Length: 232
Image 1 (cartoon, helix red, strand yellow):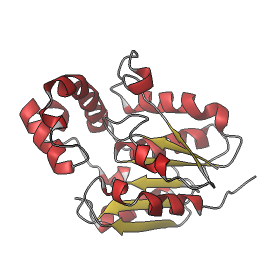
Image 2: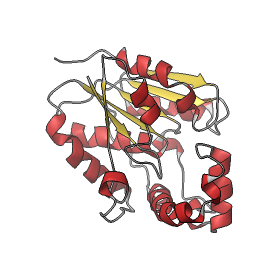
Image 3: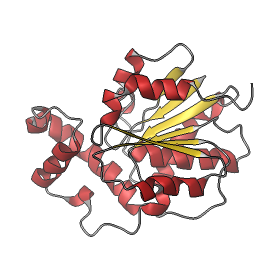
């Protein structure tokens, strides 16, 4: 079964390299790239969630004839949900499951933040990234890296900040909703994903902060591999 992996804000197709190192035979990870990074470095960055979803759909639309799941972390979880909505609206074969980690439900995101992360001064944005984890501290002190990276992360953060939830009829896809036990995501915010599907959702907390996923790769991959295809 294919598993389309959507990167988190500032991420790229290589963000899930730890997952690739331990993927079980039952699944094939297909790590997607967004414009302006990694294999698509020469393409302009996109600053709108709808445009990001359009791009992701173009990447997967010819590979929906076999059982597949969609996984996304943080921003990638919102994009995974919206990509599944797009596929549903077009009447195409739907994923057997969505695996959504490190994100409250889109309904729970609320209004625009009073202090948008995308417009923080560099020093303040570095502090936010340090708090989230996922980056070696020396990398966040490397001015060459930051000059390259900041436009990417700011574009992704701006897209998320501008996104507004629009209520639609629920999907009928199972959701697996995962979070770290040190993340600022409440149980109610996790459980609110249930309003987006008529199928049961499963929630789970793992030890760790926002990037808990990299300490639990094998467990998460076993969960994905255990999802049952709805068609063959």
